[in-house]
Amino acid sequence: MGTTTADRGTTMKAVVQDAYGPADVLRLGDVPRPAIGDREVLVRVQAAGVDPGVWHLLTGRPYLVRAMGYGLLRPRVRVRGSDLAGLVEAVGPEVTRFRPGDAVMGTCDGSFAEYAAAREDRLAAKPAALTFVQAAAVPVSASAALQALRDQGGVQPGQRVLIMGASGGVGTFAVQLATAFGAEVTGVCRGAKADLVRALGADHVVDHTREDALDGRRRYNLVLDIGGTRPLSHLRRALTPRGTLVFVGGEGGGRWLGGTHRQLLAVAIGPFVRQRLRVFVSSERHEDLEVLAGMIAAGTVTPALDRTYPLAEAAAAIRYLADGHARGKVVLTV
Image (cartoon, rainbow, N blue to C red; front, side, top):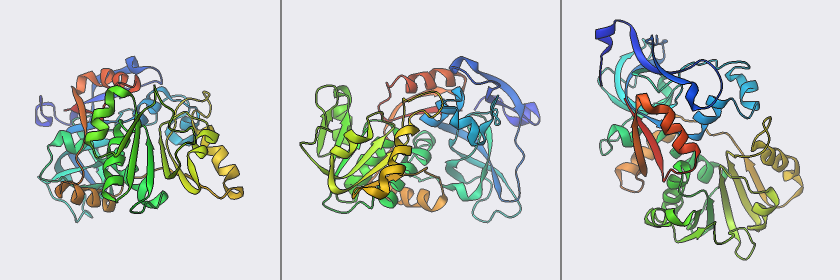
């Protein structure tokens, strides 16, 4: 773990961001150890996951992100990171589910640090079968996949499900979860990542550099578009007449709205078409984390890890993810 809090009093090492910009604006610095509220838990972080949301908060793009309360001119929260896994160091007086020494996973603001303050309702016990690195890969991505399939998509056994972006953090969980729900799963990814997606349980794999899964030759009951850029009209073309499309994030677009322009269009036309067009923002809550922990314990779901970086190399980890190289999750070790 390196230098301990005891060695430095109340300070800790953290990945700090004082301005919006490329990954180079990040620096490893000393900051005060966070205080915790009545219903919060102080976690000694062992590992922290990297997800596309980190890149958006790093760059402040699309500008809509800044308007959503993250800081107009500079980041409101200086320490980056959301996913975490670690050991409970202390608990607030109203916390009932955890005590010091417990191994946990979950989310918070500022997980790229030696310590992080997390709300009790955003944490769950770490599955014993997982290392801290594996557990840090779960909360944001697996929760998004579960909510997209179960809550927004209403996936049912026997349905045909198309997962765009199947080899990424959310996609690797979505393939496993859709398979567990009894669907016939088609995953879309680059050819070099096809073996991974197939190994996770996909019945069919489409290399998007050689074949267009949205050409309308095959229709699906449910399409998950994960961090995609394809036009709404193309995505609808792959749906059955009463199929469901679920957006899980989105990239591309202009500097103001980014990939959300497709979601806004879906909201506008949704009431006038038979297909169900779902736009949502995932949230990490302990009930879903516990469902996922149970599936992990049963061997139904396993985090797909690409590589790890030490905390000091957070900028390199974010660049690697943003460049599209990742096969599954990227995790920082603390």
